[in-house]
Length: 357
Image (tube, rainbow, N blue to C red; front, side):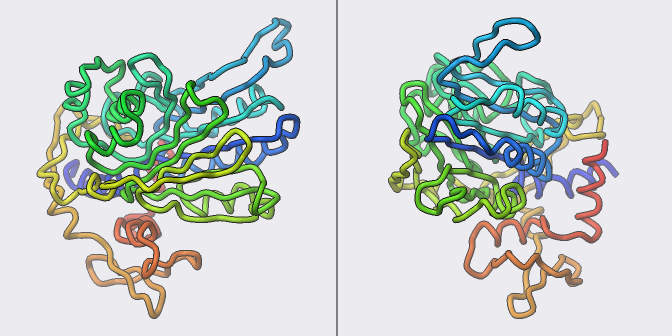
């Protein structure tokens, strides 16, 4: 029975994983997006409820808190092995008009225990200069640390990407990391800059609020997350281009550079097996480690009927896809459809049920 449950969970873990989001605020003095950020963070829990975290960068200290003068200037991280709804109050508590950047994460635990140490955001283990959230899984992350001659501070595979970003930027990630990766990060050496990149293994979307050309920039795992969180304030929305490194500069402008060989870093069919220690998923506990052949799982993925806008389960039965999904032209949509992410039948109901543990 346990192996059957794992076989259902793993395809979703490989292709869906965690939720990530970010906010970049170029105009100091107009922090009017706290409600939207809370909705985004809570909404991202649809992709993981094992843990949640937020990083924020304040250029000035906040007002006295609980009668004590507390200066929250600089980069700070709040994270815990709980669902994001339990932490959402911190958006109002710690963000202020001087907040320039916010990173959000909801975790579906894979590598490492489900605790506050392995929860995101992660700092680079060398000096902590990089603060990063990651959606996906990195294969052979232990070898990455050996190649960099860096000692990790967590058991989480994502920390390998943070280490690479400090060592040599996104080019180092492409050189040394393999797996599914969508990354959002800040670098203390680049004041006021927000970075984003995906290799196509997991979705990533972005847009602007209030003004399609110059409004605050927001990122989320999918367009749907951004649309639900910011509603009418979202004036533009795009899927991130695979392999493109986006930089949201301090003035709010966006530059980008295409990183060669980015797509080569993403493959699942070449993974012979994935070692999974049970107990990290909500409500499932066991003393054993189970290995499941990924190629067998991949062959059981969903298909789609473009003409009738239907998803097709492995047994041939169908279900209606959301209106905004277009797997014929959008690779991220296709990946999610094939993973069964929009199936509210047998698999979808089970997936939602485990979030209640």
